[in-house]
Length: 93
Image 1 (cartoon, helix red, strand yellow):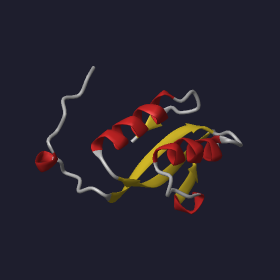
Image 2: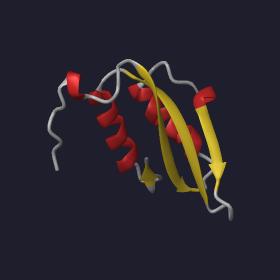
Image 3: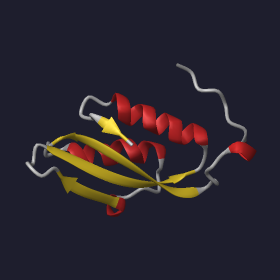
Image 4: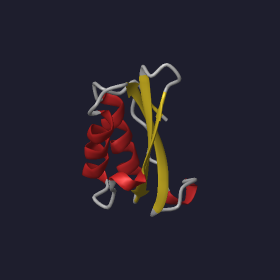
């Protein structure tokens, strides 16, 4: 499914801006570092200090919230696709 381009005047996000993205997957030692590497490829200013981690109540899953510097709709869409298609990821919000 291809999304139609949204003209800048119709966007609900002003660019550039800080934009949080929550990524969830099974608990894995390398999950957070792997997500940081994916995010950094789209936002070179991103650093691990901008990550919030939360394990599930039973410890089977982990969620990380990454706050990126969003510079365009295209950047966010591409980042979302890269995270969503990563084999370690179950959900991206």
